[in-house]
Image (cartoon, rainbow, N blue to C red; front, side, top):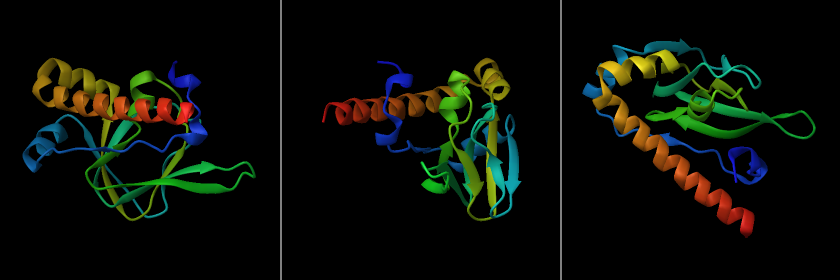
Length: 150
């Protein structure tokens, strides 16, 4: 079974919560860009190329998808200390959902170049990030497989 085989209508969106302390975030900020969005502003739209993942520093982000009638529905809410856009970035897949700031929001934008630079210069910061992503993906994979059989 591959990611393309999973029944996306039955999968809850995954949310990665980062246990990074303020000092680690400050170190990552040396490599990543802090970006700001006003409430209601689109961060990225479904179908766009996945150019980054985002860590919510302050505020909240709505993950939006269109239903069968074309009406936009909130799939999930991402809050401080959580991230979104990871899978698309890592597998270089177009965005599957639209995201918008639910409040005025500060994000840490982590691009592929950021990850490569961290890999070379600060693997001590990158390894825990990959471990958290792998654990969350494994948990979601197991839920998807279990739900598909159930």
